[in-house]
Length: 73
Image (tube, rainbow, N blue to C red; front, side):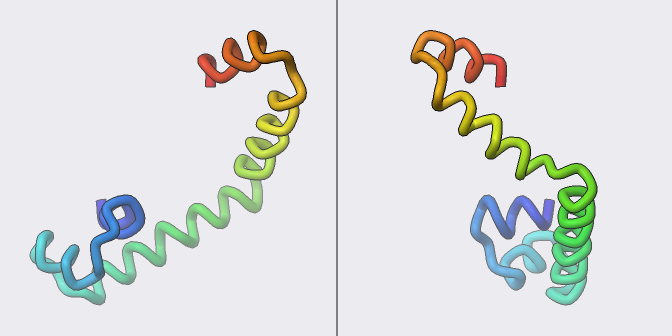
């Protein structure tokens, strides 16, 4: 939840800490841990990289086929 609040809800560490009734340092540590895990998985799985390649391929397809594939994604 800390990660989502920080990156998607644009809350500060202090705001998250106050809302969750924990220390600012605890929030910081949890966010850093989540970032490290995401980086580890991306390094090993290359999901972001593959997603970009798939989007480039989709752009080269005709419009009707593009919409069908985008619905699946």
